[in-house]
Length: 125
Length: 370
Image (cartoon, rainbow over all chains, first blue to last red; front, side, top):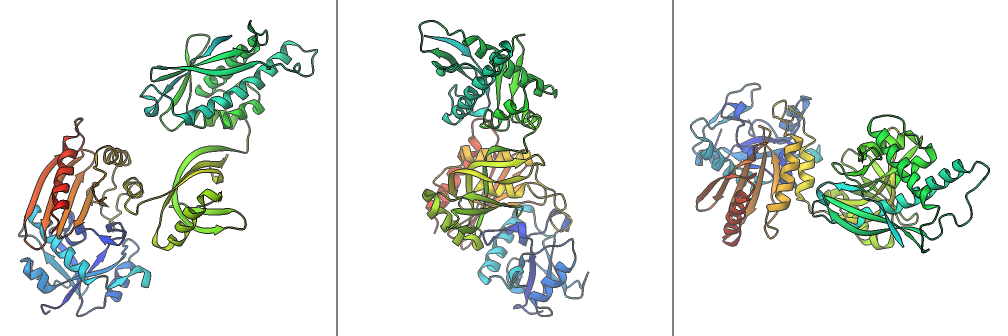
């Protein structure tokens, strides 16, 4: 992984309104134990990541946005190449921070991802 | 001369100001027609030798609204005669009123009403203007109250054996198709149902604009009368009163969308927000949110709440609302300077103080967007 590596994030359809994505998409939910699931964009295309994710009938995604490894590093967020539940899987680790700090970092990550734009959308599938 | 005839009590939010929305007067016009028909039946029952009521039976008899009294609102309706003395036919009106009130009372108890089916069909228009939570209360001869509500009206219409009846509605959706030759268009509801509607010249531009924006999700709200069948299926618009283009960020519409979520909505996780709490939140936004502020984007939270967000220049603002408590955490972050502003707000207090603070905080950010 390099600083330019894109970390692919699946965006739930309810987290999009009129094309705008919520900052919640870039912070772990309480059940995620402070780890935000992403895929390593050096090893997987956005489309392939979307197809694998949505192959599970329990999972839905409006598309794929991304933040880079360096954008995470700028927020002091380690990226763990955990390889689970699939080899390209990574986790952005928020465990060192309190709720308010997490909210702030999520806003900054959302802004970076929104500036980069959609890498893949359901409409293109 | 005139004599007081009816004092129904109208109950519901719309009547709290002790006044009557003009809309509801249509229902009383329908009641007048129903009274005439029921009175004719009464006459024929009392005069079995007659095959029809006398010519001019109701001539010179009219119902007039003479006052609106508080409580929530009580319209005072008088029987007006063109003659100096009450017409002898007025007795049949009194009997007709009693029969109608007794039919309502029977429906309220879940019993079959005594009026014949063809007369019960007048409830298609009488009572149609009532919304959920509203009622028209009539005093029975016994002193008890008979309450006409949307539910009792439906019971009466089902008893009328009508195949379909009408309802006043406001429905939101997109317009996928316009047929100018047929003077009609279709409204596509969120669940995919398509309802045909008549296209009036005065609505043409709004409808065409909405059809052009179909793929972009352009929404309209249509107020009108729809037909519904016995199986509770909507059959199409009978008439259209208003068509209003909706803002893409319309708060009520978005919260209605979020009300469709079920537990597990977030890829197996995620609690669904409570429907009643969303309705309350929509009302609170409607009553307290400053109209000159940019509308928020609204998203569900995994915990069953709602998160409002604004992008105001370099400021990213979020308001995480816990439901049903309506406690909220406001957080604004300037993306360039890192300046952060936070507030804990209560959005369900009677004095609206939480909303005042939210409006002020957003205004400060909006005015200094740089």
